[in-house]
Image 1 (tube, rainbow, N blue to C red):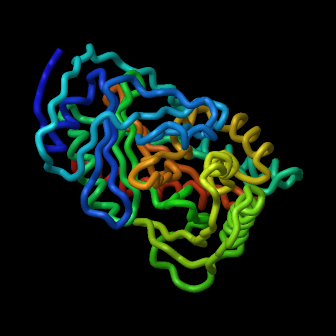
Image 2 (image 1 turned 30 degrees about the horizontal axis):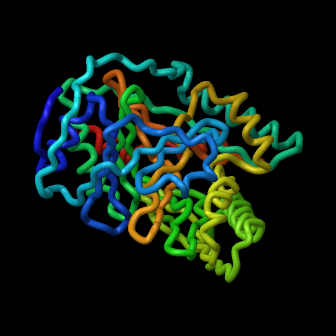
Image 3 (image 1 turned 180 degrees about the vertical axis):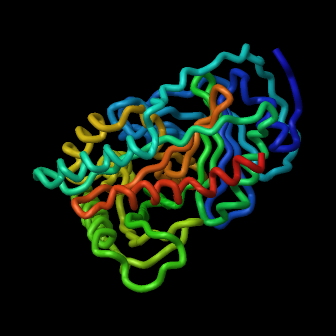
Length: 364
C-alpha cells in the first residue's frame, strides 16, 4: 500500500494510473480549470441507465451498446484545477498486465470502403436510411508516452470541447475531446443538440443535400424524444455551422422543461441517437453488428459528471476518443452512411476527424 499527498493534477494522474483506484479528470467546454473525481472502490455497474439519477454525485462512462452496463465512479474525493490543496490518498500499485486489444488488422482503407459500399447497397434495398460505421486507427506509443501530458494537451487543443481522461482498473485508459452534448440538466431545465453533417473546415456556401438530410433525421429524432418523454416548453434553434478542429458540423440546439423523475427515461430514449447509430435504430444496429469487426466499447456511448451542485449533470456523446492500452493508442472515428454516400469521401472524413488527436499524441 502506497500513501502520498498530491497537490498537482499531473502527478496525481501519473501515480494513480496502473493502480487500484479509478479516477477521471474532465474539462467542460469553454472552461479553463479541469475537475477530477476518484473512488476508493472499483466502479459501480449501472444495468438500467434510468437509475442514473439515483446514484449520487460522480461520473458515468456508458458504452455504445445500451444493453451493456454503464460504469459509475462515485465522488469519494474531488479536486478542481491543475494545482490544488493537498489530497492524501492510499492506493495499491498493481502488476501491469497487457489488456487484450480486439482490433482487426483488416481495418484499413480498402476494407473500410468495402464496408461503406455494402452499407450503401443495403440502404438501397430498403428498410433503413442511415447507418454510422466506425473504424479504429491504431498508433504505437513510445515507452515514454506521458498520459497526463496528453490530457493537458487535449485541453489546449480543444478549448470548446468536453475533454476527459478516465482510468478504469482492468479496462485501461480512455480519453477524448467531444463536441457533442447528449444532455445538460440544470434543475428541471434540459438542453441538448443535434450534431450531424460533416465537411472539411473552412468550406463556405450551402451544405450538401446528403449532410442536410442527415442532420434533419437527428433533429427530428430529438424533438420526438423530448415530446414522448413529457417535456414542455420545447425550444429548437435553426441549424447552424460549428467548427470542431479540422472539420465543421451542422448543429441545432434544443431546450425544454422536464421534471427530474423523467431524466433517466429521457437519457435512455436519447441514446444512441441517429448521429452515432443510424435510422431506424434497430436496422442500423443490425448493420453495425454485421459490418464492424470491433467492439466500440465506450466510443459513441456517453460520459460526464452527474448529480453535481444542485444535482446538475453534463453528459456528452463520446466522440473523438482514444483507448490507451498495451503500448498503443486506438483512435475511434466514424461517419454517417446514407444512400448518397461516396465511399472514398467517407474514408477521408474519418481521416480528418482523427487529425487533431494524432497530432496531440505525437507531442506526448
